[in-house]
Structure formats: structure tokens, C-alpha cells
Image 1 (cartoon, one colour):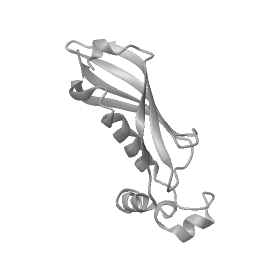
Image 2 (cartoon, one colour):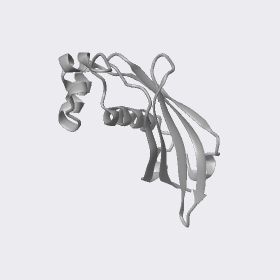
Image 3 (spheres, one colour):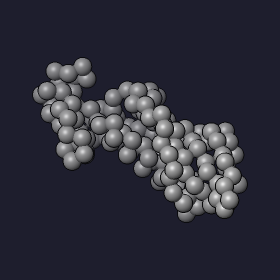
Image 4 (cartoon, one colour):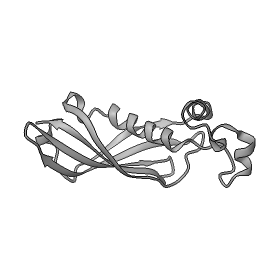
Length: 140
């Protein structure tokens, strides 16, 4: 969708994604090798009582779901900002995530527009696990 076609206040929902223990460990081993993501025995002794996904992994899954919705499609030019990232609850192996996106701001630019949205990720119980404000340049 082009910049002019998307109103402020519009809400989109994505498909779902089930997170496996194997991918949590694989992602964390490469990008966030902390015990709560890769060491099951230590993680069991932690406040989380088991392995949890890295916040960076949760962010990546959330953005994947949003991008795959293809709301902006080929009209997206480039991301411009990520603000107010909040990891509100841990993501555990077996959790199924989906994303709700609300368009919260639009700004005209010379040849493009910038759209800001609130991206909120939820688990299978409807509990919010992540949120962030994101912005991108979008074709007019």
C-alpha cells in the first residue's frame, strides 16, 4: 500500500509463528549467547524456570510476521527508526506469536512519506510479549 492509502488508526493483524526450543538455542548461540537462552540446566534455576527466547529473536520474529503481511509491499523504501522497544514477557519454546500493528503517525516528505506504527506481539494466550514503535519511508 502506498503512503496515501494508509490512514492513521488503521490496524493490521499478522499470521502466527510457533517458536521451537531448537531455534531459540540456535539463534542465541549465534547472536545472544546468554545462559537463559542456551543452557537448559542453568535456565531452569533462573527466574524463568527454563529456556527463553532472546529479545532480539522475539524482535526478529515479530518483524518477520509484519513484513510477510506485505501491507507496504514494494512501496516500502527503507526503515528509519525503532523506538521504545519493550520486552514485556518472556517467550518460551512452544509459544505461538502473532502481531498487531496500528498506524500511529504519518508525515509528508518531498517525494515520499514516513509512516510510524506501533507493533505489538502476543503469545497464544493473548499476553503481550513485545512492543515497539517503528517507522519507514513509504512511496506515495
